[in-house]
Each structure stands twice: as structure tokens, then as C-alpha cells.
Image (cartoon, rainbow, N blue to C red; front, side):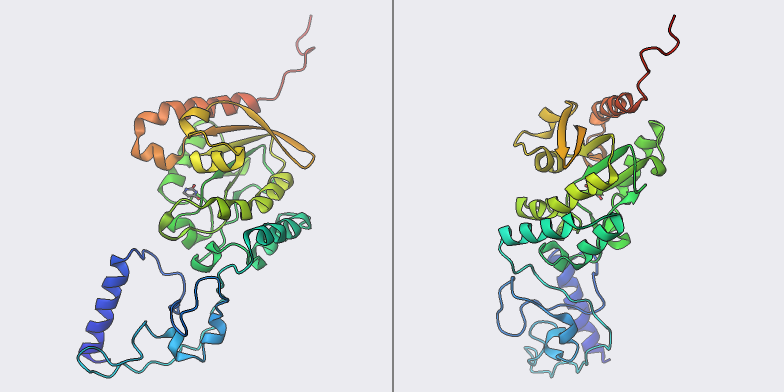
Amino acid sequence: MSDQDRQILAAMLEWTLAVGADAPVADVATNWLADGQGPPGREFDLAGAASDTRRVMPAGAERSDVRGHAPPTRTAPPVAAPLRKFATASPDAAIGAARAAARTAANLDALRTALETFEGCSLKATAKSLCFYRGAPQAPLMIIGEAPGRDEDIEGKPFVGRAGQLLDRMLAAAGWSEADIHITNAVYWRPPGNRTPTPQETEVCRPFLERQIELVAPRVLLLLGGSAAKQILRTDEGILKVRGKWQSLEFGQLKVPVLASLHPAYLLRAPIAKRQAWLDFLSVRDALKPSVPATAGGA
Ligand code: URA
């Protein structure tokens, strides 16, 4: 590679960082705008692109640059790139497909497979990994956050970044380890740039989440943050209003007490709020205490 090619590549990388890219999601770059101005929503097949150099070239690199230099010649790397698609179905059809896929999952492995093959959530097109859950497959306490972030996308597990580490410290202080809990998110793929998931994205993931709750069968659900609380409790109220108030929700045959609390990422920014979150954790711990039979230690 010539010095000039190196400089061009460095400038392109700098530009990519400046427009907000913060993590690589694949070995082959996807030029979403190449090949015919197709709007997002069109099927985009990276596997097919392996033989199509236009799709793996940077936008505009097919042409000579402004100084008239010929573009560097590149051939598509011989990797089996995963199929990346934006969801093409209407929101209602995607939710219908999610319900059908989730309903038939008899266990968490089947639910994971259903998520892996589901193409109705456009977050999947830009994320690296499916982040399904961490912790125990069945647990008395199930925790639901907002969405995977950068670290979660890299590892393929929920709550493994800074917020997750704070969550783990809080859980340990309350006497729980990973073996006692099941941790997941309201959506299973990282939203680009860590933005809040849209209502459509959370709704399309919801049938999978509801089935997951049924399969985990927790005794208590703890929702972390305003986005998870709004979506799961179907409320427009802010987290500061709903936190700390017990509610009850039904998922199939399962009726579960639900508590919303503050998100650990918020606690990292506003440590003064940790006291409120801790009160919520104590409330959850009380709710999980084995109930003492009326005759225990009786007269
Ligand atoms: N924030 C979340 O809501 N979930 C994660 O998995 C990580 C950060």
C-alpha cells in the first residue's frame, strides 16, 4: 500500500470516528448507500456482496479521488460475512412474526435460536451480537434493562460494561450472585450510538421478552431505567415517578410482582440517587424473602 493510500485510509477512519462510529461490527464494511440508492428497508445481502467489490469499497472510492488519483485496487476478502438485513416487514407484521416465533419456543435455547433467525428488528442489522441474557436460566429475580451498549455488543451479554459492574456490586451488596438472577434487556441488539430504542423496536422485541419471562418464571421482576419501565409497564410516566412502587403484571399463566428502579448508568452520573436505588433493592430483597408459614415457631 502506498503512503498516499495509507493517508486516504487514515482520513476515512478519522471521518468515520467523527461521525460517531465507536466499534467495528464486522470484518467487512457495509456501504449501505452503494449500488442504487436503496433506502433502508431493502434487503441487503452481505454474503452476496463478497463477489461484488462495489459493496465492500468505501463510498465514492470507485471513482478517482479529487486529485485524479486512481482508487486503490481492493478485492473482497474471502470471508463468510453474516447476512445483514434491515427489517422489511411492516411493524405490525414484524410483531406478528415475533409472536409466532416466540410462542413456539419451548425453552431458552429455542428462544435464542428464534431470536438468531428473526429478521423483524432493524437493530440487528447494525449490531455485532445478539445479547440474550446472563445469569441463571431460571431465577427468582429477573432484571430487565434498556438495551445493550458497546461493551455488551462486543461480548454478546447484557450489562457487562461500567453500568453492569455497578449493578453487580449492588447485587452483591444485597447478597445475590449471578447464580441467583437472570439479566436481560428490553431489546436484544445494541441501538446505533447507544440511542434509546424506539417504541417500535421495543414492541417488536416484546413477544420474545414476554416468552423469556414465562420461561424464567421469576418471583420478582426488576426494571432498570425509564425506557424499560415505560415499555414494560406501558406507562408514559417518568422513572422518578414510577420507581419504588410495586405493580403486578401477567405473562401467560404467570403473575409477577414488578418494581422499577433507577438505571445504574444514571447512578454513575448522579451518585446522589444511589440511596433511592438501594431502597428499591432492599424492597426487592424483602419481597424475595421466603414467607414464614403462619404456624412457624407457633405456641
Ligand atoms: N445498559 C442497559 O440498559 N443494558 C445493558 O445491557 C447495558 C447497559
